[in-house]
Image 1 (cartoon, rainbow, N blue to C red):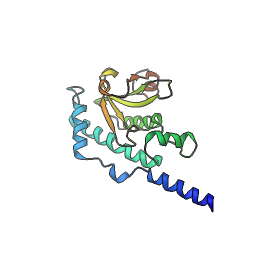
Image 2 (tube, one colour):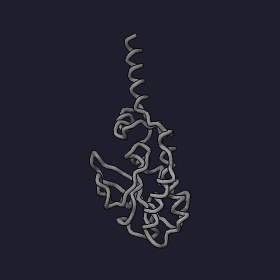
Image 3 (tube, rainbow, N blue to C red):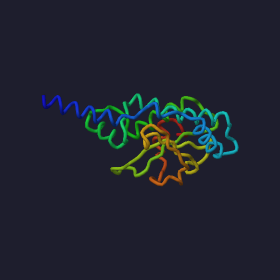
Image 4 (cartoon, rainbow, N blue to C red):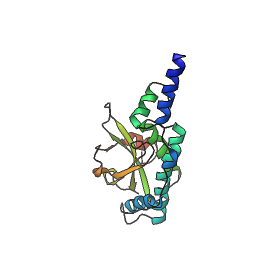
Amino acid sequence: MKSFLAFSILLFFLSGCSVKHDSLQVTPDKVQQLTTELTKLSDTIDYQEARLFAYEALLYPQILAERYGLVSLPTFHNFLINTGIKDRGLCYEWSEDMITHLKNLRYQSFDLRWGVANKGEFDEHNSVVVVAKGAPFRTGILIDPWRKSGVLYWAKLGDDPEYKWVENVERSRYYGTIER
């Protein structure tokens, strides 16, 4: 009986931390804000393509959150993965899935890059960076769905208050987003 009670309490605790997917809506305002930021990358950016990119970048993290059975906070979800309770949802896995999805949409105005902060450290963080076609990594916008548990965080690389980003060229090449 005690083990059933302990299991019930644990289950209640974990369900209380579940991400509420209905609160993760893609709003026209957010789509417009990200579209505006994307079009500022270059005057060669196609507005409609930027709008589609913004929509997909905002929507796909919700799909991944559901697929991963995401619980918030992201660090707690990482703990569940590292203890074998959950299977997927570490930041690099979000990045793998996001870069693959966005790359498959074959945008002509953008290149996708792999960003890393604190490489090799305990607090290493990975994310996708979008740049104008042919532009340098440092000019990009960070596309980070992990940080806010499936709600997309984005910022110009130099404006991120939490991390200093560098390109992981090997990963960018692996995903075919830059020339070998």
